Structure formats: structure tokens, C-alpha cells
Amino acid sequence: MAIVERRSPEETRSCILSVAWDLFRQLGTRTTVADIADKSGMSSANVYRFFPSKQALSEAVCEGLLSEMLKAARRELDSPGAAAQRIAGMMLALHRLMRDQMTDEARAHEIVKIAVDEVWPPIVDYLHKCAAMLAEAIAEGQAAGEFGPGDPKELGWQTLQACVIIQDPTMIAQCPAIRPEARPEHAIDFALRALANPRPPAPIPES
Image (cartoon, one colour):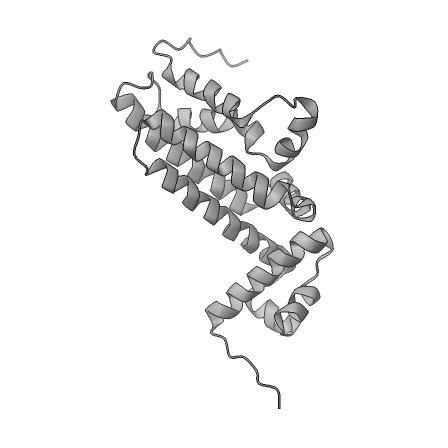
């Protein structure tokens, strides 16, 4: 008689997410709920008990991956050193994780591109949390005299946007072909120089 492995609901959910990510990396958007259920050793109906649709499952996988990236970002910001040094560490860590975990996986990149293009909720939440962490570090740098004036929250978003070329998976994939000499450090240096300006120019009037 076959022995059926008993899992808690939390373990079952975690198993589904892990299998889904493995299959996304192998099959990309062709992955089906039936594929995930089969490899997880359960029925499709059981998968739907935890995730009402393939979209919901895909978003949960995305959320889990981005959560790990945020943990890495927090570790860098909590490390000792000047604010500029810690921000550089955070942005480089996020870039490398995005590059290694997603962009270098051709099939996984299909899923990531859809998530970004369709602005899935986990992507929006991730960007807001990144901007908030940057704002926190920028405020610390301002208090220490490292950075010039400005609203830390707005500067956090501007820093994130200035480094989009090293954070967006599609841009990471395309940049080497367009400008092979470019390095992620260059974008980060540019953003940090802007933050350090003690007399930034007046904002350009909105048209």
C-alpha cells in the first residue's frame, strides 16, 4: 500500500509554491495548474483550495520571491556604515538577485515580464517598500550631513527611478547588448551624487 505523505496546510501551500516556481523556470507561461498539481502529487482541485486561479498562484509565487529580495535589501540597510554605502549595498543586492533569480532564467523571465507589464499587486507593493526603505536611509544620511535637502520620501522614489535600468528585468536583459560597458555601480553612483548635492536645482515646472 502506498504511503500518503501528510502535510499541514502551510506545508501544502509552500509545496505548491515551490513546485510552481520550478515549473515556471522550466516551462514559462505554458505551465498549467494541472502540471503543478501532478508534480506536487495532488489533484488540481486541491491546488484550487489554496489558490482560486492560476493568476492568484502566479502572483503568490511572485510575492514570495520579492519578499526574499526585500529581506536582502533590509540586511544591507541594517549593516554598519554610512548611508550612501548602505544604499549602494541595497541597490546592488536587489540588482544581483533580479539578474540571477529571474533574468538569467529565460522561461522565468516570461513570467516576470508579464508581472511588470501588467503591474501585478506584488510588484506595486515591492516598489513601495523599496522606496520606503530608501527614504529611511536617506533621512539618516541627511541627519548625518551626507545628503542634501529634500523630502526623503520623494527622494526615495527618485532614487529608485534613477536606478530602474538595473532593477527592471527587461532592461537588465537588454542593457548589455545596447551598452556593454555599463555597470550597475554607474547608475547607483549617479543617484548618490544627486542625493549628496547640497544645493540641488529648483524643480522643473510642470507643463
